[in-house]
Image (cartoon, rainbow, N blue to C red; front, top):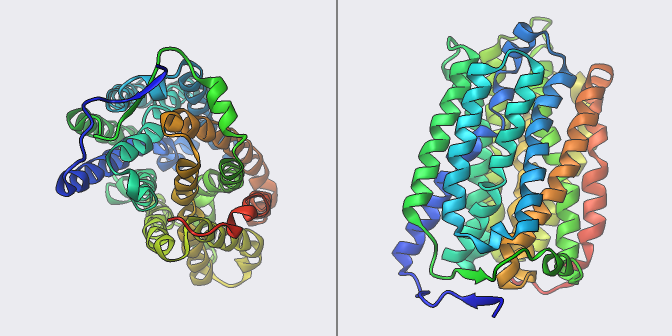
Length: 407
């Protein structure tokens, strides 16, 4: 039998289920702090290694490329559905922490840094998608809400290195990066100790790419995945550009802000997305995941179009718009994942989400490369390059709005 329900599965006590959800969410926060650790050191790296905005884009894209390769390997081999998710998460957390530490301690320039950051991205392929699968094995009936919490933690994890940089402004960039490695080790240990949920569904031996590919033939899954792809075109490019946007907003008085002030502003703009995730989870209980995702994607798309015109409004107005953008740009992500989980056969959830993530991050890498390369020429008008993602995503997911809300 290719797939079978784990014979040891037993319904979890509500208290155990809630505890597991919190443990996985916190571990996700700690593990994903690896993602943007290089961006938190952006100004130091630009100064020490004479990097341009495009070079910072290469550092970010190295992680995205590694993540894509890692997710494709996971999908082809069936790792996402064949091996215990908690063990894969733990091993990848430790590997990512080690490679991130090597980036801090052994990089001598852009080329070696890109290699180490690529390895971090491969490791993250075993953290983010597997964290989502773990949540489903513990609380499948509350996917929209628990995934909202998980993505909120991913958002805080992404922002955490900016917070470290802002609070400990006297630290060298290497120390900031090493701090994220320590956080990832703690997250790996937490998930290893927790183990699998009682609703685990194991697949058979070998890869399952053909079956996962057929999942894209399911209309609801396809509409959700295409909406997610549009969202991903915008999300990581926006997060990569956030320090540049914040620096531009704080420079309106003609005085260049210091690195810690930019880091604090960047943390606020990214971290506020956690509020958007949680609010979206609550809203989805009333109007459904599809409508919640549509609303968030529409708001962030509108800001892509309007933000360039705000540069004449002063620092306060620009920062306010960035905060609203930070809330909306990520609020739809858990809802897309919840919609995909709902449409996907249970035994293929891990692989399908991993493949969906892989395509989404490929698009995000293209958007990051395009936008960071264009930033020196377009300045804040680069936001218009992110607009096609939300527009096409809204069109693609529109069939889901006709469905009766199921979350």
